[in-house]
Image 1: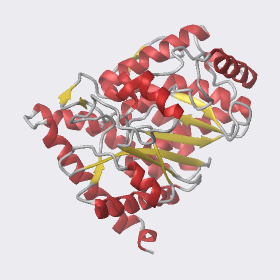
Image 2: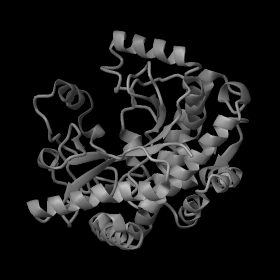
Image 3: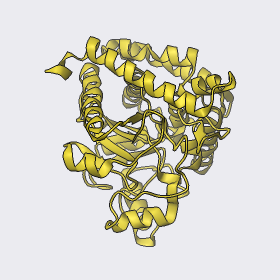
Image 4: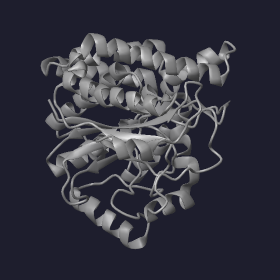
Amino acid sequence: MLLKGFEIEMYTGTPSGDIVGLSDKIVASLDGFVREPDSRNVEYITAPARNYDQLLCALLRPRLKLRNFIKELGDYTLIPGSTLSLGGGDRFFRSDPTNPYHDYIEQTYGTKVVTASIHINIGISNPEVLMRACRVIRQEAPLFLALSASSPFLNGKTTGYHSTRWSVFPQTPSQVPLFESHAHHIEWVENQLMAGGMQNVRHLWVSVRPNGDRRPYDLNRLELRICDLITDPIALLAITALLEARLIQVIKNPDLDPLTQSSFSPDELVFLSYANESAAATSSLDAQLTHWQDGSSILARDWIAEIYQDVWAIAKQHGFACFLSPLQKILREGNEAQQWLQLHALGLSEKHVITQAIRTTIEREMELEDKLCSLLVA
């Protein structure tokens, strides 16, 4: 099994769904939390682990700590979703007015970047294998967006997207190639930094990127950045298990590579990945996508089901198939965005849907804490 970890961005606010900036107080008082440029969301990062039981506790323990702390500040809670669902998109609330990089973010992108998401990091130490893994997963990243979509609302209205976050998020630089080697990646990043296309090595905002302690030179993990916020830890672990099993398959099979197994050129594959991401942001599991290998048209849910069947034996062999199986529930019942839109279609307002989701999230976490994570009370 591979090392895995998460970067989790979440909104804070009131039980009625209004998002309120508290990150300055949170970061000043709680270890393990870091601020985003806008004060309305805050991030925590889990330590790398191989075991999924450990990951579950690593996800829940900081969240419990955060919930308890913001309750002390007032009637505050954590808000599901990946966009400013009920309002607040008209202005930026700076978390650190003295930070020049935050100046650049606010002035360049505005509230398009004030989103919440999950970044999934999976350890791969060999840089060339890592680059090949990034090539494969970049082509399949829309499938993970389809599973995780949770942002159908913005500023109190439906938007026509299942992932409004990914539809508005400013991918930067605007055109990122498939990196053919580690050397290609280094050269490209150095050129972008020199030309101002990237402000720093972190300023590579694309669905999938290689990550490490000294980017772009020392790399040790694949970072999947496309997923919306997944509030259900069991669903998040299932999506992670699908990613891990696929990566183990890629590592074991050197021939699995878009540069050699696709009928498209590298430039065409980049265009294809952006088109598929856009389709997944719009319709998630019901999106009509183009397969990177042969150009065939395929529904996102059908493609996911194919990969699921393909990697099930790998997950079973490595002992984490039970964490993969809840993926079937997402395919059957829909992701969070689809469930919210179903409620909205029945006549519930955006505010009612979000406040109900807040309550559901709390109930789910309490149940998981009681049943599966006794370490939380230790």
